[in-house]
Amino acid sequence: AYWRRNDLNVSRKSLSCGIVVLIIVIGSSLFYGMGKLNDEPMGDTVKVSVVQGNIPQDKKWDYAFQRDVIDTYKRLTSEISSNNPDLIVWPETAVPFVYGRSKIYTKEINEFQRDYDNYLLFGAIASKENSRLANSSVLLSPEGSITAMYDKMHLVPYGEYVPLRRFLPFIDKLTAVSGDFAVGNEHTVMETPFAKIGNLICYEIIFPGLVRQFAANGANLLVTITNDAWFGPTSAPYQHFSKAVFRAIENRVPVARAANTGISGFIDSRGRILGTSDIFVEAAMTQELSIGNEKSIYTEYGDIFAYLCIITMVLLLAASLYKSRQ
Image 1 (cartoon, rainbow, N blue to C red):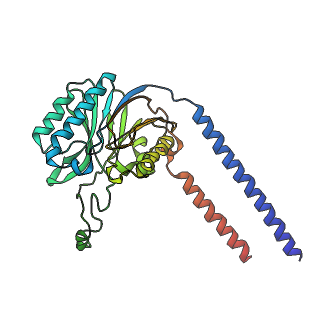
Image 2 (cartoon, rainbow, N blue to C red):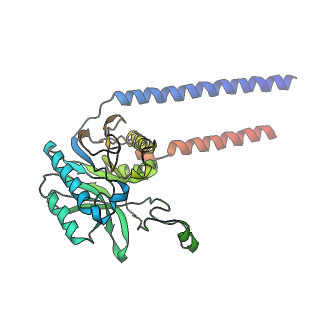
Image 3 (tube, one colour):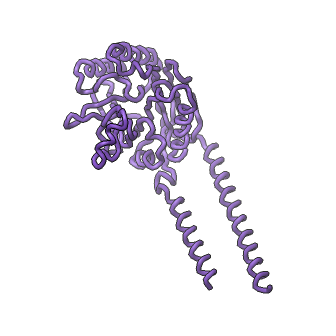
């Protein structure tokens, strides 16, 4: 009876200590978070415009509508250019041709860019080595020349590539795959006079570690381009947009988002949504953003907190097993 009472007292003390520690950790986190939210972003600003073409999925790659798609983006860009943005962003695969392979249309886009004194970032299917294609983003300078290109690194299974194709050839017959794209291998940070841009394509924005690497490499403005037309009028476009809020907070870097059918919008480095478009409408929006001029603990050290929690739990479990054996 004595040992049982003693063990019970020890358990109660351990539980009380655990509750106190939990309250301190949660309270500290809330206090720190509220302080950071009230700490307004400081430093240089950049004016960004996003263009939402609202191109139906069944017309996006239809040759008969190729001219209409290009003219839509050119028209919306001309309208928004009066705001004098530093950067204009078109969505994922905005141009309905293979950039670099279709010489006439590639030249048209490059020459169109020369009419405006800003940078243009747009999504495109780009021609790579060995006749491979990549889901890419292209940054054009005000002179219409290519400043940087980024190839998507995290491809969509069964949409942009077929997993295990090398080992299981029959898988090809199980899916109507829309493409077999080359995989990007570099976290490209696009240099401009006003910002260092980290560009995420489609659902890459949902992966914290991938986005963090761009910020760690120096990106102080995140741009995400996507085509959410596949989702239709469901909750998915809203859920997809909400993920960008976490990436802004984690890295203290603002986010500009251009989506083919929405939601397009802007998020500041504290995670506050500054403006959004509706879904399935044409839109052209401009917002001034304070670029990220500080690195968060997460940007610097990644998932070290999660690793420390795992190590602590393993040590506590080991100590508990040791005491039970004693």
